[in-house]
Length: 186
Image (spheres, rainbow, N blue to C red):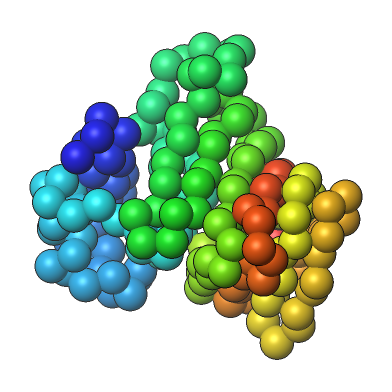
């Protein structure tokens, strides 16, 4: 297990404890089993993007915040070489936390989705933010509830109210996109 995975394990546990949540309560909120949460917190399992999305939403933070907390340096400048990259062990989905870790509401995240890969998130993973997707390279088939958006390089989509989502790359090359998040309710 790499350093970021170990830091993520500790960060999930710290966030849960800080909110005075038992493993059972987090399991109920997130839909992730108690056994899996235990394995993640002990560093015995490398969580997938879907699991981290469920856990971060249940903890009231974005997936980017979770990764950023795991790599927090306190700097206002985050050089490209210092931007933490997390890769989903199942799909190869790669997420780069571009923004410096601050208390500000804006987060920028670069994602690379391999050809044919899909990642799905429940609606509650989006409850705390406004979000836009800007496609940098390739194609993205984005399912937002029952609506399907076919997105190409240069397209930018503002997400609507929280709904279950699926990010799917139907192309033969990687899809790269920027996610701009503004944390806040409503």
